[in-house]
View 1 (cartoon, rainbow, N blue to C red):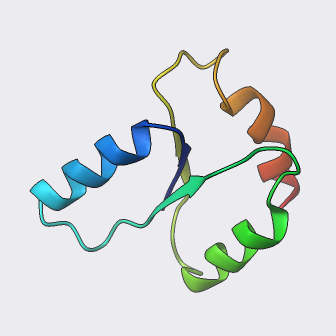
View 2: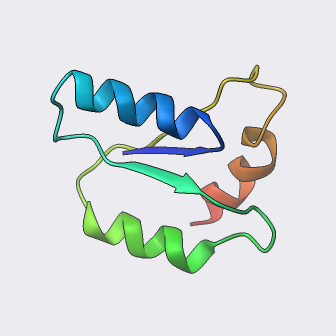
Length: 75
C-alpha cells in the first residue's frame, strides 16, 4: 500500500496501470487538516497484511511527509 498526496498519485497510478500491477493499493490523502484518521484506518483494515509506505516528489524534509509521519505512527 502506498500512501501519498497531490499530483504524485496520478504518476503512481499511471505506472501501476502500465505495469499491470493489481497488488498495489494507492491511497491519496486529499487533505491533511483535519487529518483523516478514520478514513485511513478504514483503508488499512481492507489490507491487513499489506506493508505501507509513503511516496512524495519532494525531499524527505519537505512536502507532506513531515506532517503526516507522526500522525500515521499514531494509527
